[in-house]
Image (cartoon, rainbow, N blue to C red; front, side):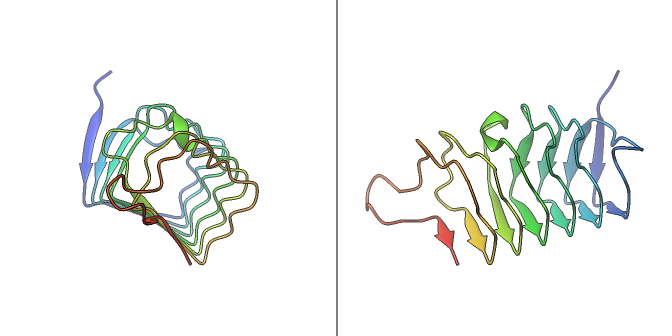
Length: 141
């Protein structure tokens, strides 16, 4: 089966557990009020996309590519970001609920966590600091 390439498309109020998203590359897309909970996003690629008020709780992120992604007001419980494709991994979180997520061993130096809930998060062995300065680049506000 050939994977799709979707660019600059908006998805709103879709339950992807009932109507699965087609595997492929999504570039500059917007997902609003969508439900990805318990879905398999393995090997999907998202570049310069925004997820707004979505539920991604317990989604499978094995080899999922997140490049320059904005998560805004999303519910993201129990996600294992360490299973993502780490090439170009880049995201920010604003007003998100990230409880029980894991970022084990990831390089997330420029990640922003703004007004987000971070209970029981695994940041063990994460690279949060640039080697040259020793200053913290991850921002939790």
